[in-house]
Image 1 (tube, each protein chain N blue to C red):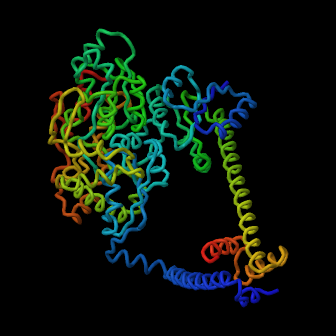
Image 2 (cartoon, chains in turn green, blue):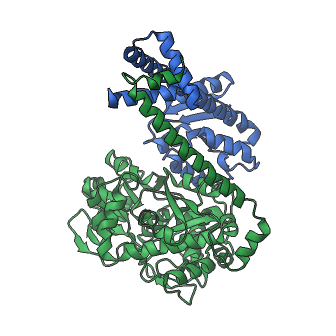
Image 3 (spheres, chains in turn cyan, orange):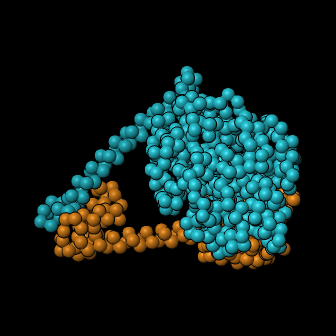
Length: 434
Length: 191
């Protein structure tokens, strides 16, 4: 019996006929798709010399148009998510594919081996890899800074019950009650480790000898504090706010009170990627810079909080993100305030410029805490890592201001000024160090 | 003797690794599922090497332990100094990540890493084979259903129904299973 017999038998086989029709349509699509591929294959025959000439003639078309950018579920992954979700990427001829990662180690490994083209990453981590701390050295790039402020140090309710409410009372407890005090950060060379160390030291506590430092993944901080595994932690929002919402601890300080407008996460990649794909790198900076500008407008923040709270991104309730995102702070022990120095993403580009002094600061702290055994050539490392040229070109496209000076000056919580001028002396000058 | 600690929520995957390490004379000092107390466990048990899933969030905890105790260089195997990129790639694809807490020469580490990669790979293949077998089974089921439909509609026997299916699949240049799937779907709509 042939297949014709099936379709010609009208009494009971119309369903088979409908399948046959459906299939022929599929074949049509298949054929036309093959045609399109054929055209692409023909384009492949255009000699390379002609293509390169087109580039040399001034085209700044991205070398790679689909870019995978890694991120960790934190409030400040917003620029990557917004650039991709709201189409700022398309404007610059690229498609950003955000890739959620489970650890900073995974971000580092995948960025270094090229599985990720770039990442939302801790400023200090990029410099740690550049210096070969805890792993193989690799030439890295900071393409832009993503945010200022908006991290916090949380202390446990157990410490509160012992009368701790600030750095001074914590120091008193440590002096009087002899036990192991455990403080968590997020990565040994990262920003939170440096904020925590700086704050402890400014309060007379040596983070190397007086406490035990551990690392806990940000989304697990609150759970760990709840079961009594730690006395304090420093982490990015929303996890500080979450500790208060879950009633496990209180905010003893925000990081903007340690260093007002401190550098934080960056868009990081490898030197190799930038050398091979300068146009893609520029397009990424421009798209994300424009996203930063969008996020910084207060009227857009609620929408952004909602967007990033989703399961694919930060995966927590929108309310936990939204409050501190616009400066509504509650420290969990009775103080509520409107903080003008909440997490900033743009501020006419002053947030994003890869200041050499910002990069050098992390090197000075790595030296201070013994992660670096000797003083590096601070300025030449920062000049190599921070990609001022591409950043400035991208800022030009977006219309962001470009500061004339590649250094900036800040006074930190202990009154000490950092202006990038004498890094070795600055690193050696702290009373408390490793 | 090297003291190995395994951290993985997937015990099914790491059990064979544990056995093979024991068989080759390594000491497997701990097999942790819950990583909440990873830091304490490392401090108390002092493993020489920790084998962990590449995508585990607890990797940063181990990074810290390695950096904080680095009086001498402690290689993290993902960044081995012997520069064997293929080996690293293989390990990553298998999902193996290893941290060395201590300074141990590469030649002593190698067998542990190799065993971990091999076992993880084996597990991956087993899982793939299982998936394939399941798919095959599902395909057989759908072909049976399509055959049943044709038999009922056309009042023919099983062999005839099957040869009808087969010849139509050949004519349409489709797999019998895909055609059967469409028949079953279409039947839901039309009958």
